[in-house]
Length: 383
Image (cartoon, rainbow, N blue to C red; front, side, top):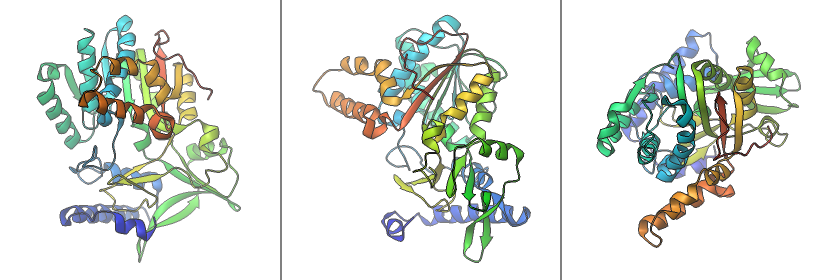
């Protein structure tokens, strides 16, 4: 990150800076215990999820105008309502529950539940897998205020249920899973990790030691010099979801590419980004604990794991095309034209579907077991 960008960012409050300093000390101590080096995946895990310290475990605002980024549910309730139309079709023959992974502010859960209530097809339970106590409290407060009659259907979990009939929903979850950084050099492939020196946190490369990572790296169409991410956690999560889902639909929404695009020769510095106060930064060491760290999703790897686990690939396409297929414009047409609410909604729809906004950057993948292909999304872009 250039110094000029740093000067444009709002300085953290003294309490927030002290929190970040505590996170850095925890990471420094972890590096010392590990002998002077930790893989980046461990650094990312600590910066985001360390209990009481990590970005998602802390109490600062993360979503919306007051946070660090804006997700689709924060842009418009029409996003969640469109997803609910697809989910309603999947629930009709199977019944059962909805399981949302990482429900953020709770806005998506609220919009989905309200739309399913309108359609008289509420799930038996709406399960939320949320590891952050702070976010769990915010989700509960939002639902209790906006739809108290539905709160009794919502159950929070710390781990995946053993069995599920229904729908699993994950919006912007896979991009926040810790990733390995891999550096292809003329001397060979190295894993990029984090060390500590007189200046603080620092990059350091070591030979790839993990056999699992080495096997994943060997399959990638990469020529040195090249630096990119390998996400082993996303396929592992998909395998767990497949083992959990007895019958139903998995709906994934995230930014990413198929493998050939992800590891394209022109993308030689990877996709890793830090998000702070609506700025996208390249400095992974910027204010640990106060800034989000993300990487794009390799949807080919997700689809391969799903297929090996017996799931059917029902759809993969850009978010814009998916939402239009799901009836987004029909929901907009139900509003009164010319009203301030309609104009705000129409502006939000443009952001959600236009290719130069979120329409192509974000992808939607539908996977299923024992369910018919959703009528609302029949597109299957090649992977």
